[in-house]
Structure formats: C-alpha cells, structure tokens
Length: 237
Image (cartoon, rainbow, N blue to C red; front, side, top):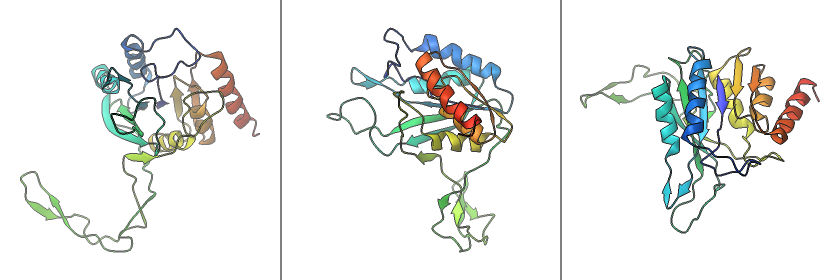
C-alpha cells in the first residue's frame, strides 16, 4: 500500500523557492503509483486545494479523476477533519476550511480491510430493529434485526485527528492518521510506500506496526529528519 500526501498547489515552498507543483508533476507520479501497486493494493492520497483569485483550484478532484483514468478505482472519498483552522487564506469571505480529502485508490478490489471499531454505539446492548429502503421506495426489515448492538461500532469515513507538528518540516502528517490507515489497508509484513516522505511519519508508523517501508524524499534536510526518526525506532531508542 501507499500512504502519502503530495504538495498542495504550491501552498508551501518545502525549502525549494523555484519549484513548481502541477499536472506535469502529479500525472506521471500517479501513473507510476498504479504501475508499482500490486493487484488488491491501496493508495491513500491525502490532498487539499489552494484558493487562487477567489476560487478553489479543484486540483484534488482532478488528481482523483486522473487516478481513475490510470486504472485505479476510487474506492472511497474520506475526509480528514483537523478540528481547527490550519490553512492559508482569508476568512473575510468564506468559512474556515478545517478538512482535507483522503482519496482511497485501489487496484482492483482491496485485498485487505481491517476496519477500526472505536465509534461509541448509542444503542449498545439493545437489539437492532428497523427497515431498509429499497430502490423502488419500498422498505423491508433489516436482515440482522434482533442482533445485540455492540459497545463500539465501525468508524465512519470522516476521521477527526488534530494536526501535530514535527520540528523542521512545514506540513507533517499526524502519526495517528497514518497509523490508522496502515492498520486499515495492510497486514503485518506488508510493504508501505511513501513517495513524499517528508519528516518520515509514514516510515516510523510502518515500522512500529511491523510493516516494511520504502520512502522517497528529494530534500536533504527533510531526509535527515526522517532517517533520524526511523533509525531511532530500529535501534529501539
């Protein structure tokens, strides 16, 4: 599987003042991700949009549609609710953006899904009851009617995880977000890729969860941060 967060519409400079991020960059990268992903593998692609001349760019959607053209399934469109405003932009004309997209691309049907069940169930201990609406508008009784509700149900596809900084990097992953995706879409012994490794959060989480890891990073400063984090886990320090 892949867990990654590519640059967002040039919202950050990432130590490279003259660099650019656009279709010329992300199209071939998504093509290569499709090539190296095994059948049944999953790519978690976490992105947001900039606002330019009063309009959001929509590049997140363009990337998702391109992934589908390359052969990926858009298995799920998930939301990362950060719970607080961390974006760049004005609040004089719009509500504060507190979320990012988490597109789940799959090569065929996902081979692995380990759903996280930590959503408190309001009707825990009670028997299920009710009806399900059919395509023609009619209803029928639930097939699992009478089952006792558990204490915790399966998580929904909107995850609230507060951002947490890593010294030396402008836009790091929060480790719980990465960890939960790795748990959801892979098993112990699987290989996890992050082609935009940054401060190494995906690598650190992969090793802690007994997965193999491949990371790619072009900036020497970020690479040194990532190596230090990953090596400290390998050394048990």
